[in-house]
Image (tube, rainbow, N blue to C red; front, side, top):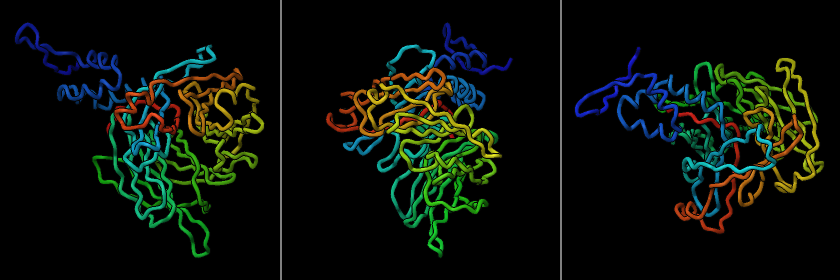
Length: 394
């Protein structure tokens, strides 16, 4: 048996060893926050927790119980804050329930904005607006690691950044789209790619757009099995293969809004397939689109009427943001100033039922006082589904 030799003081100067498999079992009983602290106990513990085998074990455990990632900001604070909360369990028959949020970190440096959802435990932060150089950071709220990418020299042009993950080579890459005008005054996107790493030199590489298609804006995103998708205007979605760094265009149904700026629409990972949701607020209905055949670009759709109590739960102006880990529940949240306490709603397509989950433990009196947030300061919030805790350091 392979042993991880950890000296323990017992009966004076007696030294014993702990088998590696037993030590791993002990570690697995602890939350990720404790594991990060345990790394400072000894070199042996550090090596065990940082090993790829153990990191993968924690990742597997986390995928079985993903969480909601919550990014909180306010006009009275220059900082943003990252929380997470348990995702709703559709086995729960309660019409409403309460979960407790967990504080992770000050999510971004001043001026940064959370620009993507969680991708295998990591997310992206950018400085919005038109700048000469645009800085981009990659964050891991579980470890607190921040990886700074080289600045993108945009010279005042519009820039969009999206994070993707390649499960084959186990690499994270950032795709940066910079909009440039051609001599004919048409928008032409330039595509830059950077492999994320804190131990190796990072640089932006320009890749060719072999599709020949031009677009002037980027909307939403989702990363599924090594492919990064984002909307590129009416009836078009861009697919970026993270491993091969190839780009292709996918047509969406003409009657859908899933590839546009329409604020009641979103791209999602629906049971491993590319999906999108249109929420028709005036009709109080919702349409789910699913790409059934990627080669033929065939989509299926399902429209359902929402319960009459829908708007009473969250108000008229709501947004959809992904699917829970069950693959059946849509998550909706207020698109404007959230009420106190914060709440989200889940819609179950199979049961055609809606449930409300109240999230407690955020922005209470002590938290506001410590971080200098006024009692009357309005807080804005972003929700991202299916966040997994990843103890990997890039």
